Each structure stands twice: as structure tokens, then as C-alpha cells.
Image (cartoon, rainbow, N blue to C red):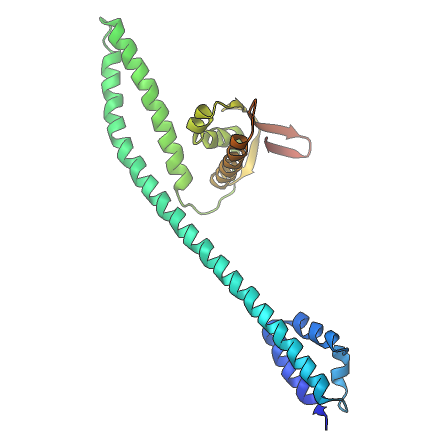
Length: 239
């Protein structure tokens, strides 16, 4: 006696709905059948052929379950990493605010020193302190802007300003690695439409990848960030 093809087709339809057509079609092909054969109401399968079909389906199901298990694990790892990054972002934001408060006081003291017209040496020290405080303040502002969660928006902005802010986050690494930096002017240049915050994150990641690659290189190391105003649009290159 054979196995009723209609019963097989019914069970295979359940597998299709749960796991997709490819798994079922591959199993049918492996035993020499096509999906059209299952529409024949008179179809019966020998026990041996049915056993082969079931075994093929089981093998395919096990592979699919393993694939989905790996996908779930990868997703879990990504979620854990995302949560770690989010926690680090919150920590950095808090630290940046804590640093920003004393900087305000130092900046005020530097202005007092700059006002000492009768003592040029102290005035020069005040200007030097103010310059470095302003540099720290810009870095903190960029860090806070980079870590701030904002809804996506599309507005006109100067691309060079966004590039300058992104590079500012890597200024220390570029200096310590003794890299030659080629970058556009921080003002001027083409205006584009988009989300400046998201684009800054893109530039940040591109520069981060470039810095990692350059650390593995030997000899002269050159990092170039270019803004090209082409006829078809604006091109940003990181090389």
C-alpha cells in the first residue's frame, strides 16, 4: 500500500506556511518529485519514497532551525552591544556636562586675566587659556550633539561644518597617530539637504574605520576627507 498524495500535500502546505516554499520544493526535488505532482488526486507514494521525503524534510527543517537560531543569537548580540553603546553614550553625556561646568568658570577667569592691560604677560596667559577652553568647549559640544537622540529631519546645511564637527571628535587620535590630514575648510562649500546629525554619525564612522586601517599601515600615513561639488551632486570622500 502507498501513502495518499492528498495527505502528503496537506502536510506539506503546513510546512510551506511555516518555513516557506524553498524548503518543501528542495525536498520534493531531492526525491524526484515536483510540486505539480501533488495536485494529482490519484498520486500515492511508496513507503520507501515517503520515508525519503520525510527524511529530506527533517534535514531541511533542522538546517532552517539552526539558521534561525544563529540569526536570533546574532540579533541578541547586536541588541546587547547596542545597549552597551547607549549606556556608554549616556555616561559620556553626563561626563561632558560635568566637564562643561568648571570650564565656564575657567573661561571667566581667563577673561579677567585678559583684561589686565597693565600686565601683558598675564593677559597673554589669559588669551592662551581662553583659546584652549574654547577648544575643549567645542569638543564637548560636538560630543553632546553626536550622542543626542533626535528625530530624523531634512534641512539645508553646510556639509563642511558637519565634516568639521565629526573630525573634531578624532582630533586627538589624529594628532597622537601623527597623521597628515587633508580636509575641507570648516565654513563655505556646498549646501545639501538632509539630516546633519545622521550624516555626522556616518562621517564619524568612516573616519573611525580609516584611522583603524591607517594604524595597520607603515610609512607615510595620510587621511583625506574631500567634498566634491560635481554636476550630478555633492560627493563626500574619505580616503
